Image (cartoon, rainbow, N blue to C red):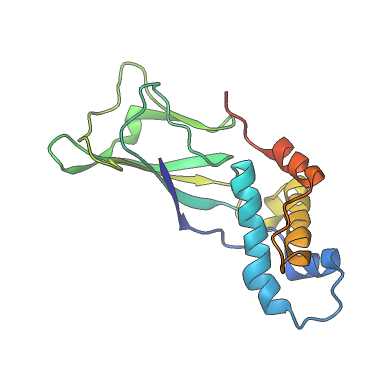
Length: 187
């Protein structure tokens, strides 16, 4: 299974002013590094750790085959929508599966995609990355849509990583516990 970010979020969940206040930085001389490096890094770290996307992001999930379990669970929550499911058929041709053949469940976490009643996943050629699911995950298109708990986690990771940028000190247990509580836990 592979996951590639196709279209990154349009905005970051936190601003430079949020970061500046949290980090207790007086000068704006570090604006570029904080905006271009530290805020995106903290967001990505929290997203990976919690299996979430905060601001709507488009991903491609690749699979070698359709799952025997009958459902595909995109590895980022909350699932907003599925744009397409494409696959390489047994003859080696690229196909896009009609959206009327599957149902997208965005009401649970993690979200899931299942074939509709009396339909089965199509057969694919036995090659790597034979199936591609393009989907959108996130809380919305603006920073205002991101939950306060997520913003606090991003700021906490930002502060820790920024303060320990000269060494690779692991996150404290309190921060790991916060991220664990926010995470998507699959059975």
